[in-house]
Length: 254
Ligand SMILES: Nc1ncnc2c1ncn2[C@@H]1O[C@H](COP(=O)(O)OP(=O)(O)OP(=O)(O)O)[C@@H](O)[C@H]1O
Image 1 (cartoon, rainbow, N blue to C red):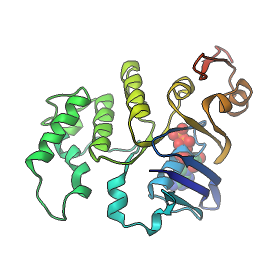
Image 2: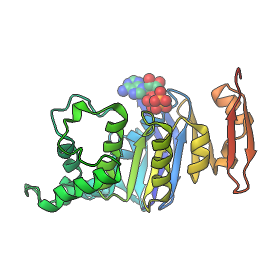
Image 3: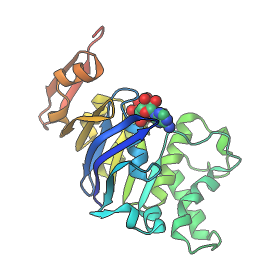
């Protein structure tokens, strides 16, 4: 499913959090949102997710304005993982995972054995077998983040919108998660902080600064030393690997 944002403008109390943002995520692609703290990555994801209505502009799924699509259809096809899943939920891990199947069940239909078996498979795939009965609040930050992604995948979506899904993960789990996203047949829009990882795993990058798109294109087009210096205020060395992807190294003291 193709995701397009056109001229997205979000204003809060007279301040523009996004200004005329354009985003194009072709079907099956992985698009990385990069930018310094406060540049608008979460606001853009929340706008694409429909949590925030833009003052101007629109979000389309396969060319159709999402506002004109039935809510339940959107809930089935678009899965969202924000940074703000509360830690104190009085639910088991299984309960949290079962939430993903709600849009797929007829209204008020009970949970089926298949639904429960699906949660066990999702946990095994996430490297957390047997965690179904654990209290959600007892999980570590990284475990919670892995269950959050498992929940999003269990929804069987066409589109995944993810806000910094790697920030609690150790390096191996970061690579595993990004590999899964890059190879999954879903359209992914993901906010990331690691320029090196975004360069390796994303098909396209949208670089934001102060609520505006500074550059958009392939990682090699976007992640030049000059742009990294201008937007992040650090010095980077960028070499292009044989596969055409930039290898970004941030220099100490830069
Ligand atoms: N509800 C709100 N009311 C007022 N300002 C807001 C609101 N939500 C976000 N902002 C502001 O909008 C700007 C963009 O925030 P956003 O969370 O989108 O940035 P971000 O790029 O995701 O940042 P980070 O890398 O720190 O997560 C920030 O200056 C933030 O303070």
